[in-house]
Amino acid sequence: MRAVGFCVPLLLCACSRLPTWYAPPEQVTTSSAPDPIQEIRKVTMSDPDSLYSILEGISDAGRSEYKWTSGRVRLQLVAGGLTNTDFFMHYWLTERTLRDTGPVRITVTIDGQAFDTFVERAAGEHVYKHPAGGIASEEVRPLNVTVTFDPPWIDKDGSKIGALLESIGLVPQL
Image (cartoon, rainbow, N blue to C red; front, side):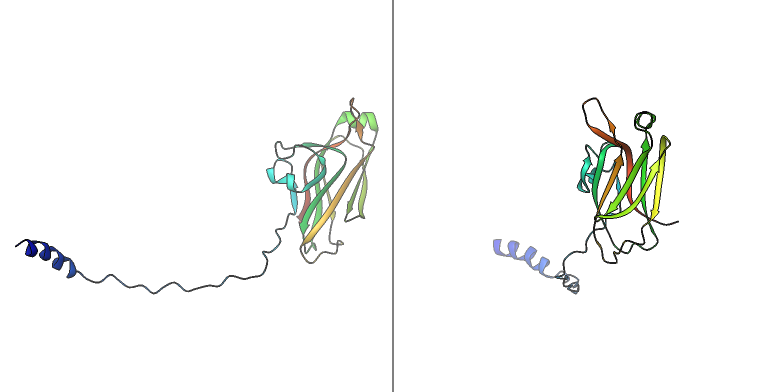
């Protein structure tokens, strides 16, 4: 009798329907090619990732909207296809800097080649744009950018200070 009590529930379970069958998902092979290079067209001082693009001249980026630069700033952008693109810089020159140094000559070089030079005579907020279509770069590649402020403002401790920088990079022409 015990065997019957054990076998009845077992037989009742065996009478259930079979589970629904699904085809296995389509198998996709991944490419063995390297990942595409991530473009870095604009560096904003408040972005924590900006530290990866700044090579020299700006310390403590990624914490506030504007950062003081030294007299010479070096950074690396990664971009390609620069037709219809402007080189862009959003910065402040303080009244004290201009009072102590006079007009400031700002020079931009890209990959060691002179890109543009201009003189800033007014204190305050400035947005600089210059067409970047002349930079030969159809493929995505690193672009080494250097910006110099001449003359820099000299602090009490002897450090050379350029401007307050908010962002710099390549933007589409409007």
